[in-house]
Length: 288
Length: 329
Image 1 (tube, one colour):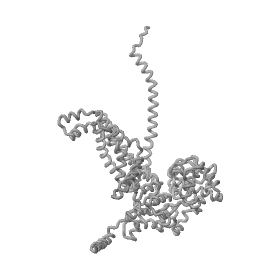
Image 2 (cartoon, each protein chain N blue to C red; image 1 turned 60 degrees about the vertical axis):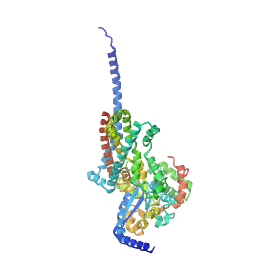
Image 3 (spheres, rainbow over the protein chains, first blue to last red; image 1 turned 30 degrees about the vertical axis):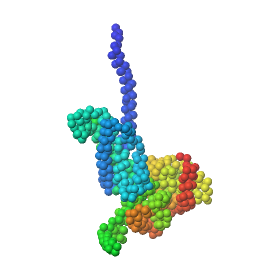
Image 4 (cartoon, rainbow over the protein chains, first blue to last red; image 1 turned 45 degrees about the vertical axis):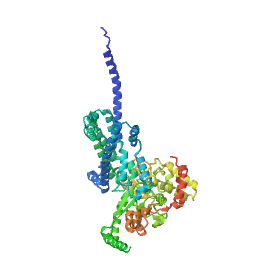
């Protein structure tokens, strides 16, 4: 029996097989851990929300959702989102464009400032607006003199939501614009395109999926915003209560758990729709 | 000059003549966090009465939140015409801000508290531990449940009621009262931040032998969770639900008349019946007699036996006060 020495290729393959057996176990344990923690941390609470929301049947759910105050809360949340998302899209493009295409003093600072809302708790944003625009605040006397209402009304809610959601679009668009570079835009300019045409036909098609992805994230965050808005809303039912605030209000009471969970499930459904849109857009984004 | 004044008179006549047709009053009532159902029941009744007596329509808008946070919002410009709170000290904050009259307690009857409640007990079915009064809560085999008195107004009342009970039982001996609340607090298995969370700890997680919360809450808890029953202790503490006109806002909004009428209306038999139906004790003698069966007799102490709110704050709740000394959480 002749012993043929293993060639290098076989040796590597054998080593890999041995390692694979060990790795497979590690992988299985890790996957099991991930599944169990996902089930307990994310899936179970979601199922529970819907289970409680429909505890009194579809009729009970519908009755809870269609009370005037809850309907108004849904409506207000939609209005705030519809205002906030386009503003942040414009803001995000402008910031990303400025940082990606120009060199100017303070460019690094601007990049940092845009990220600030991510690192500050929303309630701090709310309190800052309160201290600035409040009756005892810095701008308070001026606003009162001119009868301008900012806090405890739509403008205050929109401002805080804008603050909280400001980084989402810029953050998605900026890396893409930096990666793509400005060659195509420069070529367009050389061929005689005006600034607007460059943006419309060259820049925008390149970043559209990232832009939509950022907009969906921004919308999801705007819909769910609680901490900052709770400070500046005034919580007037049927006027300044957004959906998350309405959920808290309903939850704080006895005998209204169906109403609270029904409102919560509505918010959850919006979030799930946003998640599906996000996944769809993310796959397009990667392809670009 | 005379032309202008006659024009003014003419304008006033036109406005007054048009008023009944256009009249629409609107006030904002800023209130505590769990009062939504109560005012949803009260406001339509007031609107009907106001329409009948004045011919004008009125909308009462509601805002609900933790009453200290609500007071803060009013200080910063939330346009409240009236406040209906569950903590007197939160109205005093508005007095300091210049928004509410300093003598607001005398502006309406009963210390400006149209209805009131008191800390009471919820126990397990059949009251297996035989819990009847505050003295039972310091037994070694009894676990009472209530929220953290540092964060919850409801739990502060529980703490003060226990203290007032112990003071009375021991002939005013403060050292013995301190020991009593210390033992009480050490018996509590979990301190949640708010009363709602404590109710869940007791009713849903089945922790503890007795839940202590406002009597007005106990009916709702017993209705929602089968297997619990209510116990009213022999002695408890008067918990005011104070109301006040936010004068600065009401004057600016031109709503002083309707806002004052709204608060006065809360004392009428019509409103008091709605309040009693929501399990609040009421001040109107006739209505109180009608619903007497609903409310067991109880010896009510007021915060005055503890020296009033200013002294309570300094002595019990400020840093290094009695609560800090007896509460090792």
